[in-house]
Length: 425
Ligand code: GDP
Ligand code: IMO
Ligand code: MG
Image (cartoon, rainbow, N blue to C red; front, side):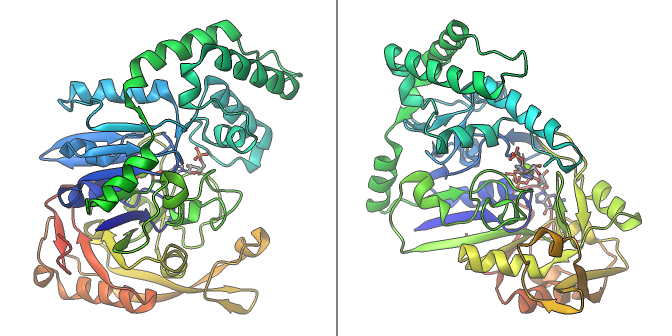
């Protein structure tokens, strides 16, 4: 059996918690896109684990794979491994494998990320400044240094020289320079620490698949940050939709695959870009504080708004999602009235999807359906029948509007605070 978990909004839907919850069923957990721009928080018996690059299955001791679709900051990975080992999680070549052909994030990519944002001025994306975009640009431009390139000194020197020529032109009006011998030395040093993890992971994943092992593909970010289908240019630089698992890992089996979409019971977004249901006043602030909506990676306040069924429906279609997992229901507990956006009106015309045009996106007037709040705690509830009637009505109404089943409802950050309505576990 194969599972894919993807975010259906703008990221931070609670994918980490759900991957950890489902990991008991899996033998292997695979990351297939993004990089350390991701921030997945897991809370297990009051212990908090924050993961950026490592698949969330690492906490339960599962085999974990960082696939070729990810961009790898080797220094960030080494720090994450050290941080987790201080929390008692041991990482070795048996529970971590990294695709040999993965492209690296280098220090220059972080510098360029900052510079690009500065140049965009008021139009800045609000990136995590982890060098994600520039690293993917080098991948597409066929200039990247890959993990396997670190083995061969001659090739590595040639590749560094190549990059230096490219960036010298790009940065000719600045005083930023790449120091060749320093970069070479630093890369060799970090490679010594990490080379034990380098494997032809595409081959391993397919072999595990044929042996009937359960593989869980862990998405990062969310559908609306997808490079093709998101709110471009206010997106990340990878495809976050489920189609990416195949190219981002080399896995080829298409059958026995459950695609699970993680969806917050409201909507959040970090960084710039359109957000039709954004709430800037009292309710927005309530959601930020009650939901602890501060970014894991950058600590920025997340923008908050009502549940946008129009967007989620689109994500379900694009990713072929079979089941929705609804998280953070408990955050809505104190609200008197709750709204769901069922469609958009743009200059008098109704839309049941998000048009790509930026100018149209900026003119969206959301169409809302109102619901009466339940005004009682749902925190930690584990049975559907224990949910207040109005919470049940809210959930079943979402199901109707998005035309998909909500199989799991999360009522708290702990693994155990979960309603397994359709008995997924
Ligand atoms: P991810 O990036 O999709 O993995 O999500 P993040 O980890 O960035 O953000 C989700 C946050 O909400 C984390 O701090 C989780 O511990 C927390 N969380 C997840 N599910 C629930 C829930 O159902 N209720 C509450 N109160 N917190 C949750
Ligand atoms: P997880 O996996 C939320 C956002 C950034 C910015 C845009 C581009 O935790 O859900 P980038 O650094 O990727 O070039 O930034 O994407 N972003 C995320 N927002 N959750 C994430 O990951 C994100 N990763 C990137 O805030 O708007
Ligand atoms: Mg996150």
